[in-house]
Length: 141
Ligand code: CMP
Image (cartoon, rainbow, N blue to C red; front, side, top):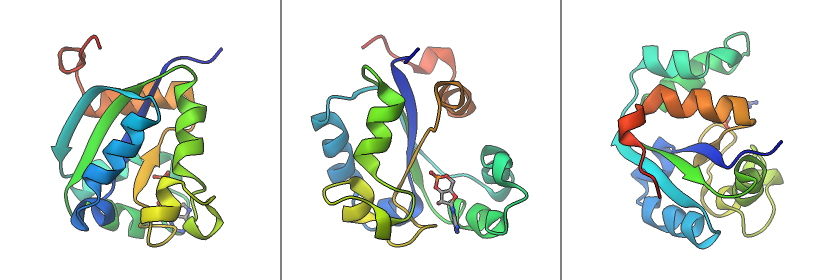
């Protein structure tokens, strides 16, 4: 069953280039409501924890270095069919394969510096949202 929340991060490349406002505008215009949002920065240890599922991958160390290299915006978003619809809005992980008009096609620089993160399942959306936000930081939109 589709639930109605997903989790996203605007990554250091997109934040550093000043694209956060444009990306949040695309997210809201696509019908997502912001339930929680914060500007923060991961250290290597926290980035490692967040991406622990990838720890055996060859890109894990670089990914953790990159994700802790600058500020990010973390957010919980609400919409019907949130996980799937958000992945459609952001496009493929590799921006070279992302469809025209998607956030990654417009703003990502590479497969690693790919502008935004989007949860890949309802279960991970809940886990990732709780990684950054307590219950009292979520509004009833
Ligand atoms: P994200 O959606 O945040 O989930 C895992 C991240 O790992 C992904 O976006 C990319 O930033 C990164 N990633 C996935 N595959 C590769 C790869 N082949 N090389 C480098 N980074 C990758």
